[in-house]
Each structure stands twice: as structure tokens, then as C-alpha cells.
Length: 268
Image (tube, rainbow, N blue to C red):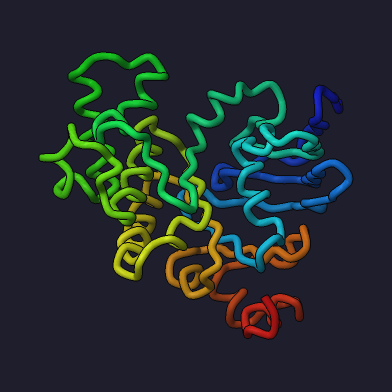
């Protein structure tokens, strides 16, 4: 049965979702007013893998990423049709948005630590979800910073402002902050584009380590980055998902001429 409420058209998925699939997306269309930003997107994103979205600026890849935790709900005039299944739940159905964003965390292009201590940055999410025990928060802060491979650098500075960290440290802190609420999925929107090569390598190593426990979906302009760390890659162009395949196959034997033109540098 289809139901319509506010600006979202929800459709039941016709196919059961495989246990190895984290997101199952069918016929997703997204409009900003009269602009058709995403056109009939169909994709299965695997669990515990890194999936990369590539394509030129303005092609829809970040818009699609943000549709996976309903960040686009915040945009005036946004209208969404289709199905986005997280496991066997449609995120555009009856799912509470706060619950969704606990399950699906987000790391942005520019590091955005809160103007508070390193400790309070990590503890912020757990506190909003009702955890106030100092002992529990201490354990979460340490675990999250260890998972983000930055505990040893920060363990003696936890009471100091997060704004005093380097850009690379700030981005790893933001990843730790996302991990603190124990999400299932981490969305990364060009997480290394503002970083130097050494910090970029740290984030890539971290993503490879984290995929053992989390599903990671990353928008990147850096095609070499996609080949280094992702299992699957989707190529977006003008709001369409042109091609989606194993990363190695997509880069070595693209099936669509437009994909080939993009990855060989003919445009974009």
C-alpha cells in the first residue's frame, strides 16, 4: 500500500532484503521544487563494506548520501518518492528520525567539532540518548577515541577545547563522535577533501579498519581514494546513477561510455 504524508511518498519494497544488504533503495526520486535532483535510483549497498560514490560536482552523489539519513528533510521544498530500506525498515515510513540518525551517523567534508572539550564532544551524543553515568561516559569516550585511532594522541588533553586540534585530528574526533552512539552505518561526505595527504592516509586506514564493524558509505572526488579503499563504487551523473559495480570492475572495465569518459579524465 502506498501512503503519502508531508513531502514523502512511501512505497513498500517488492523484494525481501538480503541479510548481506544494509541499504536497499528502489525507485528513489528527489525533487527540490521543480528541480529533479535524483532520478530513479536503485541500489543495494552491502553490509560491512566501504561503498564509494563518485562523479562530478553537482551530480547528485552528496544529495543521495544525505537521503540515507534524511538530512534532506531539512531542505525547504524537498520532495522524495520511493523506498529506502535499512535492513527491513523503510526509513521514510514510520521510523523516528532521531532513531534513524543514531543508526546512521554522518561525517562531513569539513571537520566540525563542537566548541567544547574533546571529552564533551564525544559524550554529547550518548548524553542526548540518556546516558549520564560518568563511568559509562568515560568508557564510551575511550572506546570511541580508540576506534578512531586517536586515543593515544588525545588521552591527556580530554578537558581541552577540540578547536585546538589540527584538521586531521578534528576529523578523526568527528568520526569518534559519530561512533559514540554506536551506529550501524557511517556516511562520509568527502571526509578528506580538506586534509593534507598524511591526514588523508590516516582517515583511509581508519575506514578500512572500521568496516569490520560498520557499513561505510563515502562520497569522494578522489578516484584514487575510491580504488584504494572501497569494495563497490557507484558513478553518478546529472542526478542518475549511471553505473554501480565492484570497484575493480568499474575502474578496469566500465560498462557505460560515460563512466569510461569520467574515469579517464575526458570530463569532470
